[in-house]
Image (cartoon, rainbow, N blue to C red):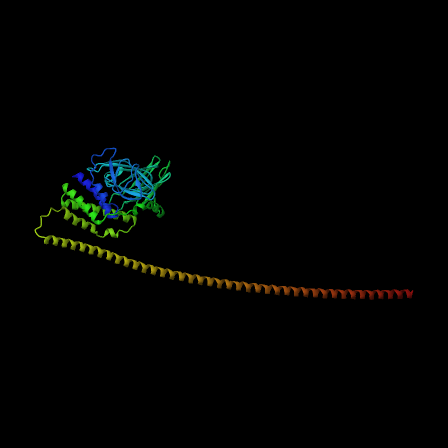
Length: 468
């Protein structure tokens, strides 16, 4: 019974991927059901090729969707190509463009979920979503790169091996996830040191001959670099697989489970639980990445379809019908149910479209209001700036006038002073001239008086001489 359940878990992983991404076809899922017993150690099955884009090969063969992958095979994805490998423990290895990956060790006990996975990336990019082995023991999944090792702690991460450098990104989940899932982490290390990545979208670089760099939050440009490596695989679409084929595959799986001893209720609960867990994990990861989860949070029709199919397929064989009318009536009931479901899905889609239109209209209105407010603010700022400029010009003009007046006043005062000084000098000169004239007159008078005095003296002398 335990082996059957472990086989069912591996099969369900492939179905959930078909439902989520449309990347597997019917032949691929059938190959997961093949018996793995009797394989030798040299050719030990480890997984199956899921989605594939471009040219992907090993050293001996070219791979296609549904091919089995064996231990020690080197998986080579050419430039512009990529593939997704589904391992037996439900781990997923997504190999990006221009990459080489080898599965060195794969040990898995489906009863206890114990085991060990060791893979090595020679070049290119590898994205890992850990499965049952990591869930049982988080230290059991290791990825070797040229510069050191990456130890997964039950999570989703991606690594890019370049020239003398390896970049590793932790995608999630984080510590405070809504479902209480065990926080993921990646230990990046070599002989020179170790760095633990334990926050979603943190990354670290590791160069040859050096300890790993510190954990940093990834930038938008760096995240584009990681996503670009997996772009080619996202473009890969399902070719030739219809909904009817997928339903037929699920019916076959349920028949085999019934033959193995599982009853209707066990199959229903297993399918519902696995779908629920897968959906919840995806919601947590998308929320941590900041992506829209409205489509996932709404009730999906997949679960209802699965329940209807389980009830139809697992139910006990019907007794032969006596008339044709009951069969016709059953067909009509089925058709009515299908039409109701289709109408419900259409109504949901219409409601979603209406809600989206309303949201877009509200966003547009808000955007217009914001633009108008910004324009008003801009005009106010312009007006205020113009007023300030005008005020500054007026002040500058007033200052110029005041300075001109002061200069004019100073000039007038200076001119007046100069004129006054000149007048004073003239007056002084005139006075000096008058004084000189007076002095001359005085000198003349003195000379005249002297002459008179001299004449008188001579007259006296002459009189004396005469008397004698």
